[in-house]
Image 1 (cartoon, rainbow, N blue to C red):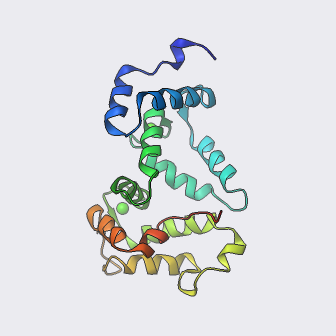
Image 2 (cartoon, protein in one colour):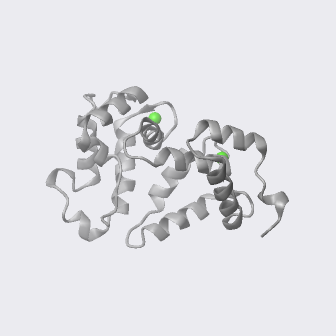
Length: 192
Ligand SMILES: [Ca+2]
Ligand SMILES: [Ca+2]
């Protein structure tokens, strides 16, 4: 474990992460060490990522959602997550309604990464979110959001767009900022 060479983070990456996240040098070094232990190759594969999600959602099917999240974290599109992508993802997804988190949510919904969200992309993510929800919770959902299609319909209605129109990042963030229901519908928080 005490291999100084493999656990030392490159200075460049560390400086970059200190600038782009709110994490301290200590925190970053600590996480890097953990990351190295769990992931000696230094890269997380889609399968490893799915396994992490599956552990968090043992009563439902987290695979599809994990694939979407993976895509949104893999900013350089090389099919793996490196430490930097992982930490930036961690930074972006923590916190309730920060602009960063919503920027990330936008990239989650922008399935084809073209800079806009369509209603069919919203439906696709709602389908993935639905698979995360355990069956007994689905039965307790409000009538107008108890299927992926209804959830997508309701979410889309907050953005004042026609079905064939598309949504830019600023419009998405503003819409979610202004609506607690939209904020709730873009994510799934397990009942604790
Ligand atoms: Ca990558
Ligand atoms: Ca898109």
